[in-house]
Image (cartoon, rainbow over all chains, first blue to last red; front, side, top):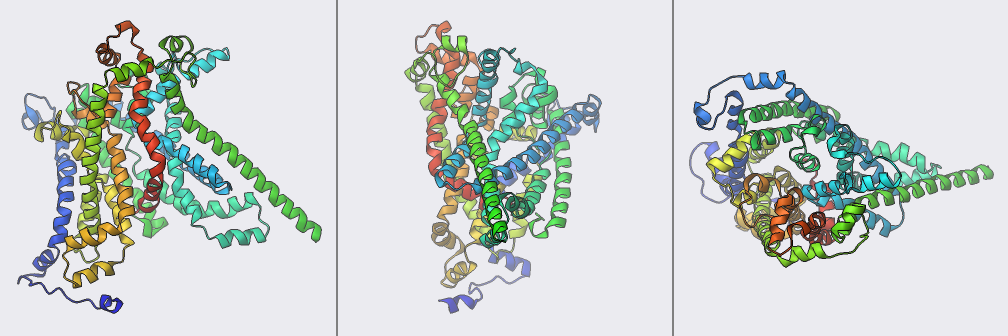
Length: 322
Length: 303
């Protein structure tokens, strides 16, 4: 059997005469057909909408349609820059993502290292199961849970504050505390599941190294600081750079369900690109402005990914995307 | 000499104990933080509306009541309809999506497939650049005319570059020699995939299938965009979203159960609906959790 495997016999099927390109096509026809549904899928749902970004350069109105609405070149972008929307959205989206990435990764590493130090198997199992739990629920339920805690009249938080004799907080009309709420919710939801990657990386660490360090008299702190953390560094850098590539993409579900559909009081600190575009489409019906923001997001996001990938390639070429 | 050896081992013990004690405390605290919000929803759902108005939401019901559940179940038509819609979309979508992801992933991992790099990039590029929400919405509603059609939820969830990349990493662990020997025996590419590769990748299929299924089960974004409120049976998460965000929606659905409008327990009904819509899945998930762990460690980042 194994000898038969090693000898590769050229395909015995009849080949059409013609150029190498045609022959290549013919040889691959079944595999091409197998990819066809996926290719069609991405053409329809991902590539067909792309030309629609032309909307960003016109003053779209419903009666004229895409082709007859007046062409305004960069007026939509000028409008977004002048009224400060674009800057605010970029700042919010990027700042949230950077905090998510940095705090998220640190907390994940922290949890993974601690889990690795624990000895009781059942405890690890139970705690991991509980920590994964928030990752598996829908954004709608997350919004409801937040409401349970933050609601002015009935929320758990104000109940606690009142029992301590403190003033209740009007969470849903106070924009300054929302960055904390959103970041905490994000960490709550993603830490358990995200720590798996680091936990698996620690598992991949050769046990002999740990044993050798123990023979040399390293204590638990030294083991963590001088062996485990340096061991996790490459994983951390790669994951961080990958997530930096998506720094302009916001988590719509999280923001929309936490903040609520039209809580204008909170927009200064909670409005990100995704929620703005959503409102442009569904509430303001301003298709051109929405598309202008999307185009800006895609182009800048693309540049950011290219930069991040260039950095990955410098750090570790085998991990770069292209 | 002997003494220093001893003191060192004591020091080792102490640092180990500190780390472990801190570990148990911190992990317990964090795990509890992950669990408690669910208990809060559960507790509130069993509380009388009067106790909620007086004491607020709490883990433990001050005044126990199953009234909210009674209303939810007295007129279960909407809830059952939502469940059926979501189950149908999840089952059909996962079956088709899983097959397509597996097929594409296998083909794109074949070293002798001349177009694999081109097609892989064609798929991957969609994560780098997108047309954004507005053109997508116009495409779905005006050109594909999928408004108020369950297909608007089913179709976009079938495939994702992430899952295809994950499948590729799984298939990579199967030696190419298996494909080659089957080819020598005269099997076609599709037959090899169907008869040889698919049975060998069942753990991978379980993982990817669960990712797709979870996506459909928690789907609310496309439902909210494309399914209008006129639709009688809406997917579960959209139903929950309507219940959570609209008091009128709750009143309307409770009206059929002969409850006075002012007696409708708005708050506890939100929670009861959330429990009924989410509870079964949360109970199910510890049994399949290991497949999700596998997914993130195998196919997480690299194409």
